[in-house]
Image: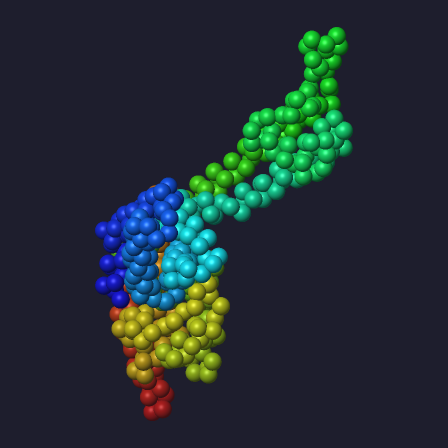
Length: 417
């Protein structure tokens, strides 16, 4: 699967798919231009091309599905689009003789849109435009409300002078849409001024006020607001996309994140002082220590973290357990974590979490996440007067052993006295 993923995600493979998509679109254009009769040599040749392209795209889709099995494949919207286009192509190809399915041929032109999912820059543009749709629709709704108001006024005052353009509401909406789209007013029916050759060169104040106010409000103001909203959300979505890519690259360069990453995010955002952090860690230990034995096993910690409502569920494996306990050095002889070891473990992981956020900040040049990461790091380092806990794990382990030995010696002295 890793080999298939490396092949599918390689630049050479993606460029090859882009070339095939372009060639397929050229064949579709030729078929639309030539319109060969069914059964001719040209029709058979174009049909063979269609079979070859559909089979190739099906193999590419299966390779993508295997390389990103299972949820990573379906979580990508572009894979849904590829699946839909390839499925429709297969249905049209297999059942091409059935009446009514011949219209599915027009959907083959949508194969060209698959090129957006293959090129990173084009995919980013489409994703950012998609993210801007909802705010733009909200701005358009305001514009439509204003147009509907003007259409109602137009029906009320101009229906007799221009029944073709303002006799009904939908005719009025179309006429006002022509003003916006084609910059054209119905002057032949509703002239703002009288004829120059006539004896009375009168001015229709109501029509002029209607036209000027409509153009000023809808064309000069509301349409510019729509464009401004589109640009603002587009740039915001672009910045977030670049930020996410930078974080992904930085995370990939450093390897897998800690299994306790969601817990670290909560701790970093909530504690105020180092003493407060210690109290929160102790409260978390008490919540996980369901049997009140003052120690946590791997099973208790794993199951307890799963039940907590973090942003992402924590799945702690045996390897993660050995990693966060520094090779079980923070555990006692029964490989259980005591409150002191649990405190050292979480503070050590918190220090590593801060280091990862600093690395993310250094990998990014714009946005606000890096500022937040630097502030979080400064917050932790300023409040922490001692060295990072993860660098003291050995010393803490020796301290735990010394404390246990001291407790045993004190108990022995008490018994002899």
